[in-house]
Image (cartoon, rainbow, N blue to C red; front, top):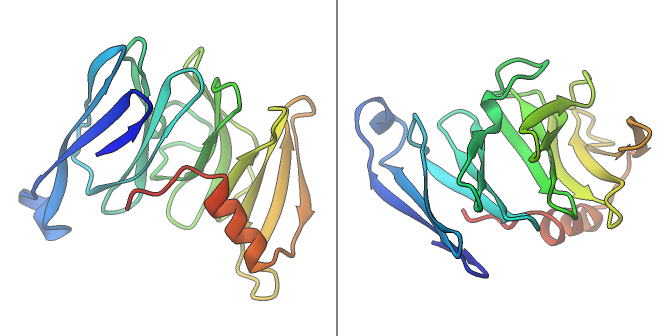
Length: 207
């Protein structure tokens, strides 16, 4: 169970069956969200193995990050209207997205910035809640986007990308909405700086 304000998410765990029994003993058989706007059930064609995190936007959009055997999915639920979208399935230039990395809501709650791609690759993207569209911000493969943090003014965000370089294992990038430009900020971040970004400003992990 997860709760924030009047919003309560309840996930039912059941015994895994069929092919999923080879991957895990249990699965999430149902997800129900209750709020002042009513009760909604999140419908998924394949039962996830767990829920990684849940995050509520300022304009009552709920992001639910579920874990699969390989990869993960991010479901957006509108608490006011009940509309659901699985970001992995939305049309985009990269093609099918096997997993969603780090994600974060903009201060006004209208936009979600996140990393998406397949195992071993990650592309930075934006999701617009008002028209239910996804846009890729770059064709560059960032390998693994571990953190996405919006600026307080909502005019852009920073994101961390892991590398294969032992000397510079993490690179900090910045994206500004008006300029539509990604720039490298620094390739050297201390473990403490990385910890602050991953624990203080990101959706809280459930598992």
